Length: 141
Length: 60
Image (cartoon, rainbow over all chains, first blue to last red; front, side, top):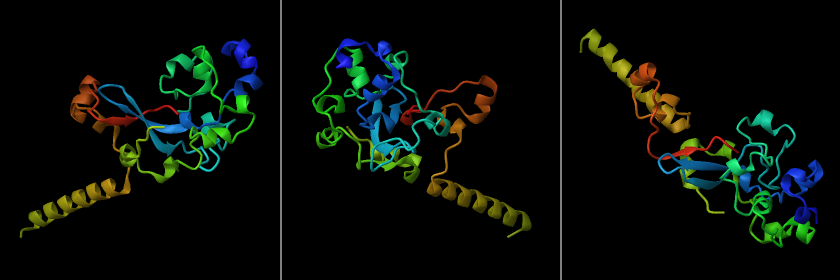
């Protein structure tokens, strides 16, 4: 229950990593409107995200293979406005409660899939989609 | 058709085929096309007003 007592910046690396629900929503390609700066999610995933597991294929070296990849930290969390509303880091930062399907709450990694909050088996890798076709893949997660 | 006209026709054909190929292959658009200003204008003013529409967010 460390997430109820500690702030994000006080968590150790293991606690920090375990807070991630592995939804994969932060790893989908996002589109931004030039005029309004509104962000649109797509059902196209980052090239490193495994479509079948919703996990990063090389989490440790992700920044090397995807230079645009943002390594989340308590310091940059507030600047990343596009993080999904269900993201545990965002919820804790805003003083909220983790949802019942979060692995730390329910104790397994299946509830998040059943609840429809995971991108597992629901995305296409960006290597298979042409950039010009991305607007056709806008998806409301 | 004169020789010069043939050369012009070939050049235009190459341009058209290259444009179609770029469109069909999904090749990345040159960065200068993302701005409203012409490439010439951008070279001197270094100004870029993004075109209306959606762009891929450079953050994952």
